[in-house]
Amino acid sequence: PIPGKAAIGIEVPNKQRSVVYFKEIVESEAFRTADNPLVCAIGKSTSGDIVVADLEKMPHLLIAGSTGSGKSVCIHTIIASILINATPNEVRMIMIDPKVVELSIYNSIPHLLTKVITDTKRASGSLKWAVREMEVRYRKLASLGVRDIFQYNEKVASLIEEAENEKEAYDTHENENGEQMEIPEPLPLIVIIIDEFADLMVVASNEVEEPIARLAQMARAIGIHLILATQRPSADVITGLIKANFPSRIAFKVMQSSNSRIILDEGGADKLLGMGDMLFLQVGKPEAVRLHGAFISSEECRNIVDFVSSQLTGEPERISEEMFKEESEEIDNVLGLRNPNERDNLFFDAARLVVRHNQGSVSLLQRRLKIGYARAARLIDQLELAGIVSPYDGSKAREVLVDEMYIEDMESGEI
Image 1 (cartoon, rainbow, N blue to C red):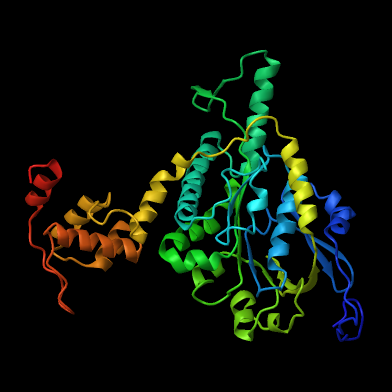
Image 2 (spheres, helix red, strand yellow; image 1 turned 180 degrees about the vertical axis):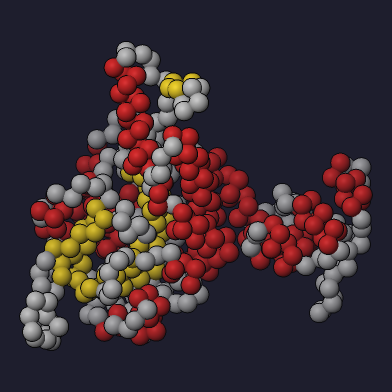
């Protein structure tokens, strides 16, 4: 159906395809008048209208498409849009790039919280750091009695302004109980971009899926937004848990109609032409809209990065490697990269659990300790080496060989 007319239309591709340039979108009225640091250039509709989208309203975005479909270019246009619109004080980013070469161009930008992550262990650690940051931010919002990050930043700005007007050193303020509290700093928005999400799911799906699901469910109010991209949109990569929390999706050309249904819950993406031809499903919209994605060249990306980097004086503020240390050690343990004789930091918790339940099972540890299968299985192996549970014997359950007193003596070093 053609909107506003009593007629139907048939879409026919042009004999010569035109290019929708990123510059054209950025210079448009729709982009320039958007009062939000997270507005992104997307492309043009079939009727030639310029389309921009606000990541804050999405609030998370799933991008999928086969090789050569335009998926990576779309990621670059989104990143470039944010760099043009936002200062490092307004938006910070975490970029995860298992392919190593796709996002490395952005290593010098001051918006990054840490250098582009290419290692799977650190990727999992950074996602867990983001979950922890989300919890910290919610406590900060509660301390000022506000509901979202925008109200929080407005309240902080007003507190600073009041202190300045009173010509005080604005480092404290009175809370609702009349207690003196330190004036907090404004919080930047955080955008987490994962290119080729499938690689993370293959290596450590249990350790990655849970933090992503938590962030997708709860992080919008405190200004953390996710962008996931994959060229393998299969059910084991885009799981039901992930899909349910990503209402905004972009599908480029895929190989099979089943892939299209996984992304959009409907067919059509397999019929696209490639090279930027996309179906864009926005939150709150009943159906996907066909668009031609904006194109940004490598040279334009470099020019934007060079310009943004040149505005910075001194070293950019980054999260140190130590911030991810605990999370990375946990992932080392999951992947078996640590010394096999080195005990997991949950070893004694697991030992007490199996003794109290008189049951040495992987599923028990998974449920009670809220960990993935790989880590739970490794803990059982360590308990076997320590003589706490019996060796594996086919379908038989492992016997618990010690009591709780033995575990206490072991923990105190008496054994």
